[in-house]
Length: 479
Image 1 (cartoon, rainbow, N blue to C red):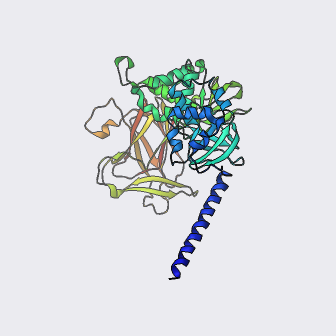
Image 2: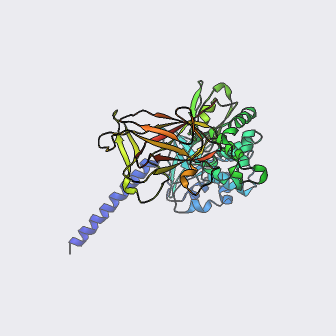
Image 3: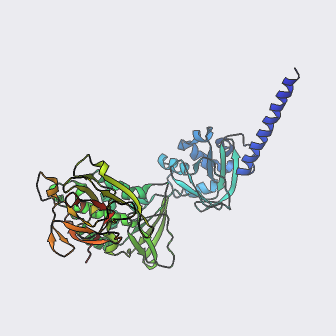
């Protein structure tokens, strides 16, 4: 009988200990608790006369229910004086403005102020991010901080936070008359949906930061004209061709994506070297900067120009041997080997080897996307005869390119585009002599891409011989 009271007493002591421990840890995290911390954020803030202006907006915003709920929030509360100043900048008679303004000051989850901590980006109810940096919120210092309520905490500021526009909205409203932004807005139609991932998404996403450059009209137009020949397609815009298949579309998209850089970049007194989200290298001279603007997802620079060569915009590419799109025939998987090997210098590489297939002129097909309208010099690497490789005799293989002007029921005959071989002679294929333990690239010849888009090619065996391919490299000939 005596064991029951002892057990109950033990549970009571354990409960008290845990409760004290949890409370102590919560106070350590957010600071000293307000005596009214058992009340909701709504009740605590509403009870303070100095916040009546903000709370009147909360009541009108539709967010009052959130602050009364059991969900956890952090509220950045402007004083009445701060709300008075805000009324000169915002039309609080507009319900949409009120909801946007209030929602910007309410943060999902609990974030205390720690002046020694690094920057924390906290997501608010408007799906924007407020930066907590050394006791400031988007640069606005806290007058009071870490005041606890039952469902979170709040901080007090003497200046209201300014909801920032994302890069897309900022440039659309600040620089709408520029040729560059006009082209951005032109792309933003239902006819150009496949530009979203490369251009609009970085300009609008809130969970990452980007740097965007807006250039002078003369520079933008000159770069557009310089790029246009390299994005030629046969689709006639005047004849109602698909809008996202024309020369203008591909030129515009290629140029616009080169003004976006991942991360919020600070440009100092020296020329800054950057790489765009599309991989284009360029530089910005500080002397060309006209203005700088902070966006909710990064920063916008208004500049005169980029420092960017045509060779940086029209770049080389590789076709990897271990990424074929098909073969002459199926049923030969047992003769196709995707290898990971180490060359004589100790460098790992991947390739494909096809052997013992027994099919005359067997081939592997490849496709390179977004090849420019330009002549390419073609180089290849195929290493034969390393340890474990049964192929130790020199052999020849061929590279063929698809010619859309040819009609034939035989697929191989479609791949006879005119080329210039490694001897400088006109041909319909590039012979490739693969020699024992040659780790160097081999020059194969030149091929001209007459239209922007896919470059289709195949690597063909000589008779029933082998095929080995690490990669083909295509280097544009830029005059």
